[in-house]
Length: 166
Image (cartoon, rainbow, N blue to C red; front, side):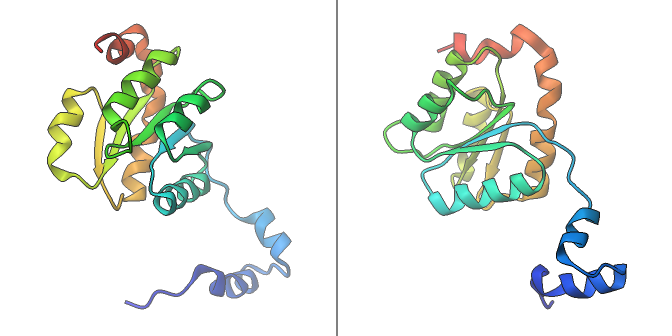
């Protein structure tokens, strides 16, 4: 299969659509529907930034933290609908970070473990995570899971159990 960079086919698509400029093209391009807000916490800078870029393109409002302390600071000014946490973070694993973050937030977000540890999906579930994704993450599956976050907010107090159980 040949992969052609998207940027190289835009001029051809513009001409097929009868659009003469990139500005005209952007004005007519379909826009993604707004998605839930997302906090990504991962010490792998490249992976976190790449995932954030994809989720931004899919319409999500995204914030990124590269260290647990950074996430704990950020959470005071940003209340995400979903948190995507690396389990193997330095100084504090993703499970402990989830408990701390959920203890600060007014409502419990959707919790998604993103990790290279395939054998921890059972532990992620036991720790209260809603999903466990192995790296590299399938962005379509992740987008679907994160968009489901909106339904979790209607569950109310039962969704705060993670913070009280620690």
